[in-house]
Image 1 (tube, rainbow, N blue to C red):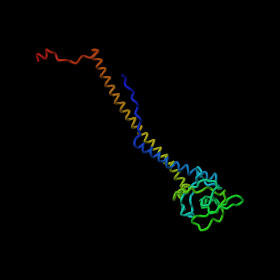
Image 2 (tube, helix red, strand yellow):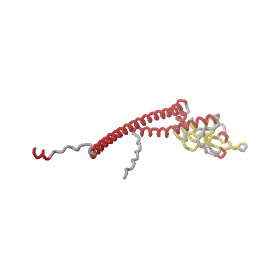
Image 3 (cartoon, rainbow, N blue to C red):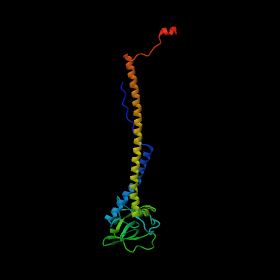
Image 4 (cartoon, rainbow, N blue to C red):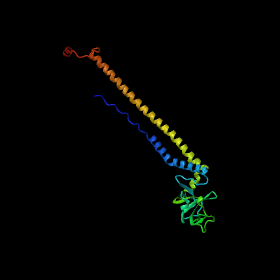
Length: 240
């Protein structure tokens, strides 16, 4: 019976290579969504300055004042959802643009003017209503009730020059360093594997050479070309 062909063993990553691979995955999970979201928001803010940038109809908004305390505070990040401005009602918290600034206040009254609604708004922490009614065209969305305390300051930093350098240039630099170390680790593992294979090949070669020499000796002995090993003569044994 012939011997079965031995399948090559699957190459295993070394400990350093495994650590670098895990580090690369963590970088992708943490930084790529932040980079993409930040770039999208910045681009949309320039291409459509009349609307707050959104992703899938949801817009993050940074709270700059405490006029809606305790619902949310200055420095928080809230999320607003695009909605039909003609369906809004009293007690809804809406975000609207006023002189290119975003304001998020509560609807206190809905008035009608020429068949179109006007919204009277007021901040929860304010004592008086806002001076100017809000038209449907100004409305950017309705507050979803979701907020991240303190995240607004972080978001504003992301859109600054130092923030973009840190959170866009920083991850790119980390990816480059990760790739360099990964290649170095892979090269080290490959050199170690090649050295091991060379040692195994050299050992097998020596075994084959020893077997061939032994076969040649046995073949020569069978063919009579090599004299048999000397034996003691019976007479010598008798008279010694």
